[in-house]
Image (cartoon, rainbow, N blue to C red):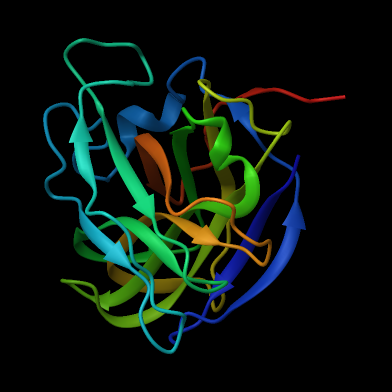
Length: 231
């Protein structure tokens, strides 16, 4: 199983490398308590998460608006929930999901960051290889996510048998070094989305659930993962 890692440029065009990583979401990562992402557990609603779709110069994304749902929840908690995102295929590279801007409170020298997200696929038809699930972090010089600096994405192609259905998994990068680091940033945009790959889609729409977002700056404590390998 492989996750792709891409450094992000202002236009959204990415340079990709390949690394291994996919894990059961059997327990919350240790870094979750330190995450700077508001509403990381998606307890009662989506806010301050909002809809995200890719725009020009990337292929334009579309899909049903994201919604909060009480189930599934990564911890099977009746007091929490998850975000449901949907992509309607249009062209390779098109994306649809959720995003939010996180202000740091003061300018921060970012040398590296840890990022982590849980996802859940309920429908086997989604696993035809035509989409990937991605988490992206974009650093900005000013508050309000203004003045793009650098960033990167981590993601997993959704194909069977690599991703069994009805199971929570995590994708993560424990030490991502953004291009040009260290960078003095005042905010970051966190995006999580389905992205169309080059494989021909078989469905009119694709849906996954997302939960438990982690973003930690400059921490040498890794996001703890229970690794799972398929022979």
